[in-house]
Image 1 (cartoon, rainbow, N blue to C red):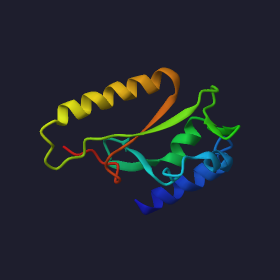
Image 2: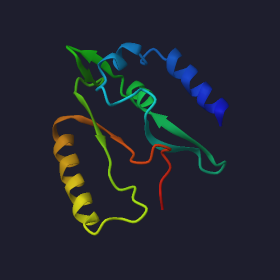
Image 3: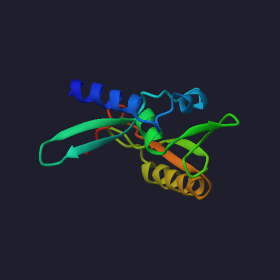
Length: 126
């Protein structure tokens, strides 16, 4: 697993689209190593790994333009921290999730949105 992470980082650094300048205009609360999601490499082999902000930005061909993070298509990128990793959800959890969906839909109309998992490990919570 650790070897997979090292290889992923080396590939990320070697990729021409993975310009380190894209990370210079990240919001202060977002780090390149923050987990975006947890991905199956090959479902039949149980090969899973975390997808980081840096990896996601590389896949979007992100770069900085006038202090803003822009994807390869020229659309501004925004980050959205997902809610919902409750051990025991609050009474109004459905209202919270509905509001989250509304906010996310609004953002997606104008921006490329990177959704950050509420679970730092990236694994889904059943």
